Amino acid sequence: MRLTPEQIHIIKSTAQSVLGESAQVILFGSRVDDTLKGGDIDLLMELDTRVPNKTQAIGQIYAQLIRGLGDRKIDILIKDPSTQPAAIFSVAKEKGVRL
Image (cartoon, rainbow, N blue to C red; front, top):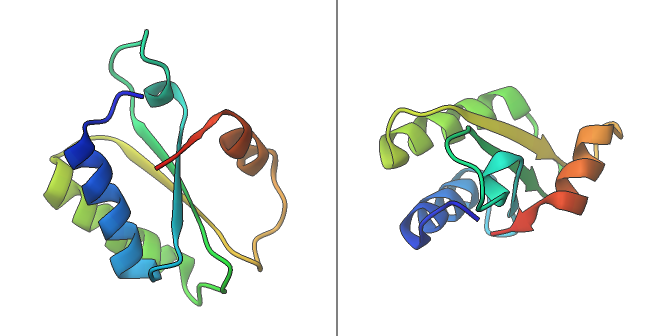
């Protein structure tokens, strides 16, 4: 996994500050592979409770992550009980790493 302990802490604490303490974060995509270089940070954030406004939550998380991690490409997905099934969620959970 190509994230530092400090980056992991920033990501997890940001997700929990916006979404609540129960938010679980999964890193997936190229950053999981130690043999690759570069790439964006792909994050799946899972919750057991419904997020009323996912777009607003993603915007808040993104802004806080940019402040904490610096200007970089970050993709954020939120999956809650109201989220429709999609292949990307399965792939993220199968190939990703829980932070």
